[in-house]
Length: 257
Image 1 (cartoon, rainbow, N blue to C red):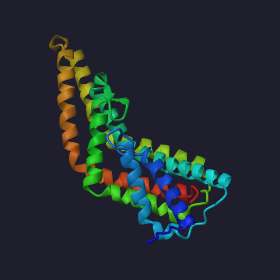
Image 2: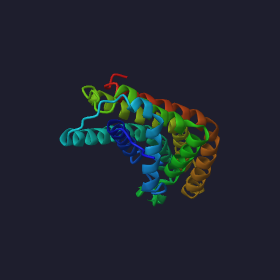
Image 3: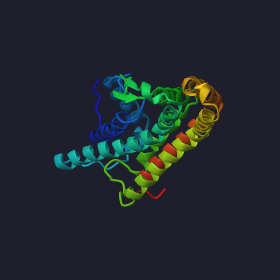
Protein backbone atom coordinates (compact mmCIF):
# COMPACT_ATOMS: atom_id res chain seq x y z
CA UNK A 1 0.00 0.00 0.00
CA UNK A 2 1.30 3.41 -0.99
CA UNK A 3 0.35 6.57 0.88
CA UNK A 4 0.78 9.85 -0.93
CA UNK A 5 0.47 13.34 0.50
CA UNK A 6 -0.24 16.42 -1.58
CA UNK A 7 2.63 18.87 -1.35
CA UNK A 8 0.79 22.20 -1.14
CA UNK A 9 -1.73 21.19 1.59
CA UNK A 10 1.13 19.73 3.63
CA UNK A 11 3.12 22.96 3.29
CA UNK A 12 0.06 24.96 4.32
CA UNK A 13 -0.39 22.68 7.34
CA UNK A 14 3.23 23.16 8.43
CA UNK A 15 3.06 26.92 7.90
CA UNK A 16 -0.09 27.09 10.03
CA UNK A 17 1.70 25.21 12.79
CA UNK A 18 4.50 27.82 12.63
CA UNK A 19 2.00 30.60 13.39
CA UNK A 20 0.45 28.60 16.21
CA UNK A 21 3.73 27.57 17.85
CA UNK A 22 4.95 31.20 17.70
CA UNK A 23 1.75 32.17 19.55
CA UNK A 24 2.29 29.44 22.14
CA UNK A 25 5.87 30.59 22.75
CA UNK A 26 4.62 34.02 23.83
CA UNK A 27 1.31 33.44 25.65
CA UNK A 28 1.37 32.28 29.29
CA UNK A 29 1.10 29.67 30.70
CA UNK A 30 2.28 27.94 27.51
CA UNK A 31 5.32 30.20 27.32
CA UNK A 32 6.61 29.13 30.73
CA UNK A 33 9.05 26.31 31.44
CA UNK A 34 6.16 24.29 32.87
CA UNK A 35 5.21 23.37 29.28
CA UNK A 36 8.06 21.57 27.43
CA UNK A 37 9.02 22.76 23.98
CA UNK A 38 8.10 19.42 22.43
CA UNK A 39 4.63 19.68 23.97
CA UNK A 40 4.19 23.10 22.34
CA UNK A 41 5.21 21.70 18.95
CA UNK A 42 2.84 18.73 19.25
CA UNK A 43 0.00 21.01 20.39
CA UNK A 44 0.58 23.35 17.45
CA UNK A 45 0.49 20.43 15.00
CA UNK A 46 -2.73 19.17 16.59
CA UNK A 47 -4.40 22.59 16.45
CA UNK A 48 -3.31 23.07 12.83
CA UNK A 49 -4.87 19.69 11.99
CA UNK A 50 -8.28 20.94 13.19
CA UNK A 51 -8.35 23.57 10.43
CA UNK A 52 -6.96 21.29 7.71
CA UNK A 53 -10.00 21.74 5.40
CA UNK A 54 -9.49 25.51 5.49
CA UNK A 55 -5.76 25.16 4.85
CA UNK A 56 -6.37 22.98 1.79
CA UNK A 57 -7.65 26.07 -0.04
CA UNK A 58 -4.62 28.23 0.80
CA UNK A 59 -2.27 29.46 -1.89
CA UNK A 60 1.24 28.47 -0.79
CA UNK A 61 4.36 29.75 -2.60
CA UNK A 62 6.55 26.94 -3.90
CA UNK A 63 9.81 28.77 -4.59
CA UNK A 64 12.44 28.65 -1.86
CA UNK A 65 12.73 32.42 -1.39
CA UNK A 66 8.99 33.05 -1.23
CA UNK A 67 8.54 30.08 1.08
CA UNK A 68 11.18 31.41 3.49
CA UNK A 69 9.44 34.81 3.52
CA UNK A 70 6.13 33.10 4.25
CA UNK A 71 7.64 31.18 7.18
CA UNK A 72 9.01 34.40 8.69
CA UNK A 73 5.67 36.14 8.10
CA UNK A 74 3.70 33.39 9.83
CA UNK A 75 6.09 33.41 12.79
CA UNK A 76 5.80 37.21 13.05
CA UNK A 77 2.00 37.09 12.84
CA UNK A 78 1.84 34.40 15.53
CA UNK A 79 4.22 36.32 17.80
CA UNK A 80 2.26 39.56 17.34
CA UNK A 81 -1.04 37.83 18.13
CA UNK A 82 0.61 36.18 21.14
CA UNK A 83 1.95 39.50 22.40
CA UNK A 84 -1.49 41.10 22.28
CA UNK A 85 -3.00 38.11 24.06
CA UNK A 86 -0.31 38.01 26.75
CA UNK A 87 -0.69 41.77 27.25
CA UNK A 88 -4.36 41.29 28.11
CA UNK A 89 -3.54 38.37 30.41
CA UNK A 90 -0.79 40.36 32.14
CA UNK A 91 -3.31 42.97 33.28
CA UNK A 92 -4.44 40.67 36.11
CA UNK A 93 -0.85 40.15 37.31
CA UNK A 94 -0.25 43.91 37.08
CA UNK A 95 -3.28 44.48 39.30
CA UNK A 96 -1.78 42.11 41.86
CA UNK A 97 1.51 43.98 41.66
CA UNK A 98 -0.30 47.25 42.41
CA UNK A 99 -1.86 45.66 45.47
CA UNK A 100 1.63 44.54 46.53
CA UNK A 101 2.94 48.10 46.29
CA UNK A 102 0.16 49.68 48.34
CA UNK A 103 -0.12 46.74 50.75
CA UNK A 104 3.57 46.62 51.63
CA UNK A 105 4.28 43.25 50.00
CA UNK A 106 6.49 44.67 47.25
CA UNK A 107 9.51 44.35 49.54
CA UNK A 108 9.20 40.55 49.40
CA UNK A 109 9.69 40.31 45.64
CA UNK A 110 11.02 36.93 44.57
CA UNK A 111 12.16 35.06 41.49
CA UNK A 112 9.63 33.12 39.45
CA UNK A 113 11.47 30.03 38.13
CA UNK A 114 8.77 29.21 35.57
CA UNK A 115 8.51 32.69 34.10
CA UNK A 116 12.24 33.36 34.52
CA UNK A 117 11.57 36.80 35.99
CA UNK A 118 11.10 38.59 39.28
CA UNK A 119 7.58 39.04 40.54
CA UNK A 120 5.77 40.16 43.66
CA UNK A 121 3.67 37.98 45.94
CA UNK A 122 0.19 38.94 44.84
CA UNK A 123 1.35 39.54 41.27
CA UNK A 124 2.31 35.88 41.00
CA UNK A 125 -0.75 34.81 42.99
CA UNK A 126 -3.16 36.69 40.72
CA UNK A 127 -1.40 35.42 37.61
CA UNK A 128 -1.74 31.76 38.57
CA UNK A 129 -5.23 32.24 39.95
CA UNK A 130 -6.26 33.76 36.62
CA UNK A 131 -4.63 30.82 34.81
CA UNK A 132 -6.65 28.35 36.89
CA UNK A 133 -9.87 30.26 36.25
CA UNK A 134 -9.04 30.41 32.55
CA UNK A 135 -8.77 26.64 32.24
CA UNK A 136 -11.63 25.83 34.63
CA UNK A 137 -14.07 28.13 32.83
CA UNK A 138 -13.01 26.98 29.36
CA UNK A 139 -11.72 30.42 28.46
CA UNK A 140 -8.56 28.90 26.99
CA UNK A 141 -10.72 27.16 24.37
CA UNK A 142 -12.25 30.49 23.36
CA UNK A 143 -8.82 32.10 23.03
CA UNK A 144 -7.49 29.17 20.99
CA UNK A 145 -10.61 29.33 18.84
CA UNK A 146 -9.96 33.03 18.27
CA UNK A 147 -6.41 32.21 17.18
CA UNK A 148 -7.62 29.59 14.72
CA UNK A 149 -10.21 32.00 13.28
CA UNK A 150 -7.40 34.33 12.27
CA UNK A 151 -6.60 31.87 9.50
CA UNK A 152 -9.93 32.82 7.91
CA UNK A 153 -9.05 36.54 8.02
CA UNK A 154 -5.35 36.18 7.21
CA UNK A 155 -4.90 32.96 5.20
CA UNK A 156 -1.56 31.27 4.69
CA UNK A 157 0.45 33.12 2.06
CA UNK A 158 -0.98 36.55 2.88
CA UNK A 159 0.08 39.26 5.32
CA UNK A 160 -2.14 41.33 7.61
CA UNK A 161 -2.64 45.02 6.98
CA UNK A 162 -0.34 46.75 9.47
CA UNK A 163 -1.36 50.30 8.60
CA UNK A 164 -3.36 50.57 11.83
CA UNK A 165 -0.77 48.78 13.95
CA UNK A 166 0.29 51.88 15.90
CA UNK A 167 -3.26 52.71 16.89
CA UNK A 168 -3.94 49.11 17.83
CA UNK A 169 -0.87 48.90 20.07
CA UNK A 170 -1.78 52.19 21.73
CA UNK A 171 -5.31 50.95 22.36
CA UNK A 172 -3.98 47.62 23.68
CA UNK A 173 -1.63 49.28 26.18
CA UNK A 174 -4.37 51.69 27.24
CA UNK A 175 -6.71 48.76 27.81
CA UNK A 176 -3.98 46.94 29.74
CA UNK A 177 -3.55 49.81 32.20
CA UNK A 178 -7.30 50.40 32.42
CA UNK A 179 -8.08 46.78 33.30
CA UNK A 180 -5.23 46.58 35.81
CA UNK A 181 -6.32 49.77 37.58
CA UNK A 182 -9.99 48.77 37.56
CA UNK A 183 -9.18 45.47 39.25
CA UNK A 184 -6.87 46.93 41.88
CA UNK A 185 -8.51 50.33 42.45
CA UNK A 186 -11.03 49.31 45.17
CA UNK A 187 -8.32 47.61 47.24
CA UNK A 188 -5.89 50.48 46.65
CA UNK A 189 -8.51 52.99 47.81
CA UNK A 190 -9.16 51.10 51.04
CA UNK A 191 -5.44 50.73 51.74
CA UNK A 192 -4.92 54.44 51.08
CA UNK A 193 -7.68 55.32 53.56
CA UNK A 194 -6.03 52.98 56.09
CA UNK A 195 -2.68 54.73 55.60
CA UNK A 196 -4.39 58.08 56.00
CA UNK A 197 -6.07 56.97 59.21
CA UNK A 198 -2.83 55.66 60.67
CA UNK A 199 -1.07 58.89 59.72
CA UNK A 200 -3.74 60.92 61.49
CA UNK A 201 -3.39 58.64 64.53
CA UNK A 202 0.29 59.50 64.81
CA UNK A 203 -0.65 63.19 64.90
CA UNK A 204 -3.53 62.82 67.36
CA UNK A 205 -1.91 60.30 69.72
CA UNK A 206 1.85 60.07 69.14
CA UNK A 207 2.31 57.96 72.26
CA UNK A 208 0.45 55.04 70.59
CA UNK A 209 3.40 54.57 68.21
CA UNK A 210 1.27 53.81 65.14
CA UNK A 211 4.28 52.59 63.19
CA UNK A 212 4.24 49.37 65.21
CA UNK A 213 0.61 48.85 64.22
CA UNK A 214 0.85 49.98 60.61
CA UNK A 215 2.53 47.00 58.97
CA UNK A 216 0.52 44.22 60.70
CA UNK A 217 -2.70 46.16 60.12
CA UNK A 218 -1.99 46.69 56.41
CA UNK A 219 -0.96 43.07 55.92
CA UNK A 220 -4.14 41.81 57.58
CA UNK A 221 -6.31 44.30 55.68
CA UNK A 222 -4.67 43.36 52.37
CA UNK A 223 -5.33 39.66 52.97
CA UNK A 224 -8.97 40.36 53.84
CA UNK A 225 -9.47 42.53 50.74
CA UNK A 226 -7.87 39.96 48.45
CA UNK A 227 -10.15 37.28 49.91
CA UNK A 228 -13.21 39.49 49.36
CA UNK A 229 -12.16 40.01 45.72
CA UNK A 230 -12.32 36.30 44.85
CA UNK A 231 -16.04 36.28 43.86
CA UNK A 232 -15.49 38.90 41.15
CA UNK A 233 -12.43 37.27 39.58
CA UNK A 234 -14.42 34.90 37.29
CA UNK A 235 -16.13 37.95 35.77
CA UNK A 236 -12.73 39.59 35.34
CA UNK A 237 -11.42 36.46 33.60
CA UNK A 238 -14.36 36.51 31.17
CA UNK A 239 -13.72 40.18 30.35
CA UNK A 240 -10.01 39.60 29.81
CA UNK A 241 -10.74 36.69 27.45
CA UNK A 242 -13.13 38.89 25.47
CA UNK A 243 -10.52 41.66 25.25
CA UNK A 244 -7.87 39.17 24.09
CA UNK A 245 -10.15 37.84 21.33
CA UNK A 246 -11.05 41.37 20.24
CA UNK A 247 -7.37 42.32 20.11
CA UNK A 248 -6.47 39.31 17.95
CA UNK A 249 -9.43 39.96 15.66
CA UNK A 250 -8.50 43.64 15.31
CA UNK A 251 -4.90 42.79 14.43
CA UNK A 252 -5.91 40.16 11.88
CA UNK A 253 -8.37 42.55 10.24
CA UNK A 254 -5.82 45.32 9.97
CA UNK A 255 -6.14 47.09 13.30
CA UNK A 256 -9.57 48.41 12.63
CA UNK A 257 -11.34 46.74 15.60
